[in-house]
Amino acid sequence: QVQLVQSGAEVKKPGASVKVSCKASGYTFTGYYMHWVRQAPGQGLEWMGWINPNSGGTNYAQKFQGWVTMTRDTSISTAYMELSRLRSDDTAVYYCARGRMITFGGVIEQDFDYWGQGTLVTVSS
Amino acid sequence: QSVLTQPPSASGTPGQRVTISCSGSSSNIGSNTVNWYQQLPGTAPKLLIYSNNQRPSGVPDRFSGSKSGTSASLAISGLQSEDEADYYCAAWDDSHWVFGGGTKLTVL
Image 1 (cartoon, one colour):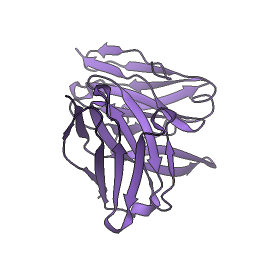
Image 2 (cartoon, rainbow over the protein chains, first blue to last red):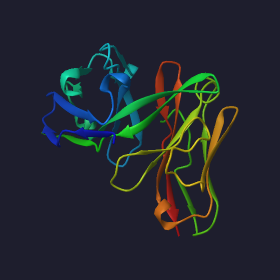
Image 3 (spheres, chains in turn orange, blue):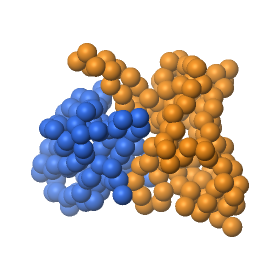
């Protein structure tokens, strides 16, 4: 069965960086994009970007361009999200989510069909 | 401020039918399909509806989705206590994904 298992909670100081991992199993890792979504405490979902594990190509939300880096290691079916120059308002649960593409009615459509369990990143001095 | 607009809360009694709206624009809902996610307390989101009105395997047919123009709706019929959760709509918008702010559903 498809599983996305993320790394454990992190506590970081402002200005530091954090790298969260997402290990995939139960499917061909290079066959699906991996997305990253975050959720601040008591808030909604915010899309950060995706990585194509096959090519390594990325697409970051404009807000995160210049301070997020998404990478992957295909040998261990793991995707990474690194956020730099952390601020207190980066405190959030960070999720990885598998991006599924399906052809429906002749059109390619997308959704996030499997999610990791989430990684809490706390930024505090 | 979320790009897609949802009511912050909704409620109903067991057995009732509840609808949750999601309003967008021509660049997102008006041009692309809508997905809905259910987030039970303390858990990761789960895909509930995709391609406007399709249910993944395992999702009860009490859940249904629809879209018209730049708005979409999620309907839950035969409301059950385990439906108490946060619900989010999402759509592709030009070159990025956007979410609604979420609707907290309370089963009274």
